[in-house]
Amino acid sequence: MRLHRDGIRDVRAFALPDAIAADGGGTAAAGAALVTWRSSHAGMLHQVYLNGRLAGATTDVEQRQLAVQPPSSFLAAVRVEVVAVELRDAHLDLSSELDPPPAGGRVRLVLSRSQTLPPGARVNVYFDHGQGQIDYSTPVNPFPIAAWPCPQDKAGFGMAAFGAGDFGYDSAACVGFGKGRFADGPFGMDVDTMEWTSPSLPLGRYRFGVRILDAQGNESPACETAPIAVIPPARPAASLRIASFDPQTNQLTLRISDQ
Image (cartoon, rainbow, N blue to C red; front, side, top):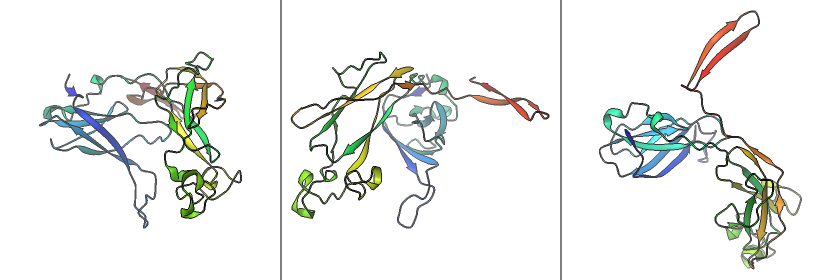
């Protein structure tokens, strides 16, 4: 095998904005990403693969970052892989030597985080393993999810510096300015959301259940989802060619190949 993956760690991808506004923020969705990594391979170049396709290669043996063009879809995660190669192989597409990605998909749950949740509340997610009956003996998440990882997010009834956490009403990091059930999401201070993404799951239908634990370990009744279908993403086509075109019907036939 001409590519080396051992010794490469801390791979990170950062979105690059299309432009910078006067306030320092990005003005549009990023069309490029900066991939950084650490490597113990001296005297070798590195290649970056996105979803199993060669996206670029370094030009210096000391280079540990590369700007690449990710897929334009924002609805699915992008698999980023960095490998070390000999200088003579840096320009070659070695994607055939990569391990195939696991055939699966992920489920994202969006949970309402109301200010009625107590301080120290934790969230556990369970699922049915595709069998229809949710297993509440072992949560999917390896560690309980903190509902309030930042104390400033939890509102109370004290004013400004008079109180903190559950007692403090200042809520410097709270979302929005609506109160109670007046608003949801970014407009409502009483209710915002938290997200959880499952590990990769094979093709199937799954049901999930969520339970809340307070600081004393008391567990709430479960809130369950309807069945969710998980469909693995299709493998990208290697080539796309025009097979024929009928000008009378204005019909174009394409030939798609994975070779």
